[in-house]
Image (cartoon, rainbow, N blue to C red; front, side, top):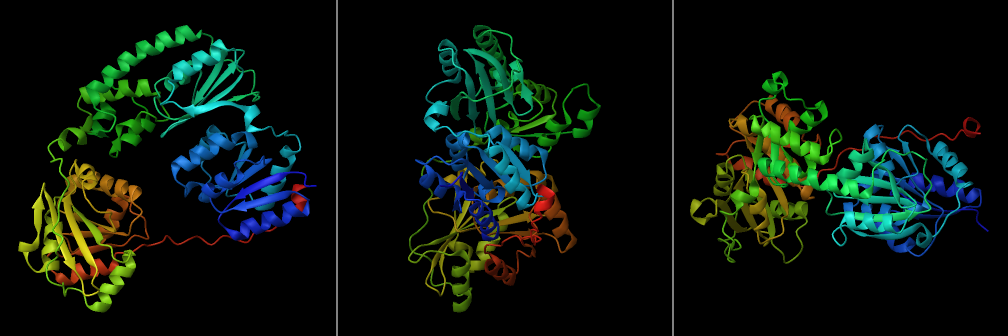
Length: 520
């Protein structure tokens, strides 16, 4: 009979083969899965002793699956390994509920022995016994949930995971004794959680924790203070901007010389365009303290605030329409080139391809389409969006959409009636004043869409600009950047044929040496 039941989640066979050998050798049961979704569906009704999860495999998953995994399986002892040597990343996994986190410097044999020893003292209980309740804050406000736990004199840990943060609230016999959110603890952390309106929660009864006590006020007092802070918080956000506004520090040099006190961490976060709701969950201040800082920065002219929602009201509500019939078969690409283009974009049979061209001020995408079609008459312009439909010799039809890097770009993209196949970013070197926002647009869109993408630089012949833009925009080294002449059709063809998925080169990992003497 096996001693322990271990679930390993790792997409790399060399590592999973090692764990299979060592666990089976000691008569432990081991099951291997290559992704979180598969593990969730297969392990749902079983009771494993522990989960051993590889960092890269975990972070490749969709966030809802990761949150669900930690919410459902924390009672079964989660160990994370191969994590980059970064204190913040390790802390984040501990906050989510990991029992231990191993970084990349720790060899597999060390992880094996470090896992086995604590398991000898762990008595696995079922989720039914450990998790009294779980659900969503959308269905029950946190203050109501806490009031219920206090009234019923519960003991345990309430874990909450939101889109941008996570926290824990500790109760003993119905008294809230401690709370943590990132590096915040005590009353400040508890008040911070009471501002969360969305997220997943789970209450774990009988979960052991130290006798630390950082909260010495009643639940009623906490709720009264939270309500007072909420009024100030709402007023500060009203004075600053909506939660979806894009904010950024301006005049950083003057700010440093001013009397305004702001942490270096928050200042660094605000140096680049960032959505306001993400700023509220920074590591230096609670959300209500951050709202006060942002309002102060804006009041004295040190904060730029862009409201996409207000400007997007000017965009017509109707869906953009592009003619069904393309222009005559486009001879721009040869048959072989057209087939290569189809293959690079992996366009399904009997489907249209859709390429989004995003240029600094919009004109770059217009000239790109004009070179492609040979005439400006075939290019539509509606709501400041250029549209062109062509059919290449491969008989695949493509819709090309062109727009500028304006504040409403994300609203415009949502109105496109087709699923995108690729992204081409066109940066005007003469528009240095738009570099920060252009870089933000590129980073956000490439995070949102897992599509082939490239970057074209125009109005320059200086190849050193490629290095400068790559650094300024933080573009990965494996993504190509080209100099582009808006007048040259050859540059348009080169851009089309280079549009494909590019994979980052993986660093070669040294073969793990097993040295049992060092671990005995």
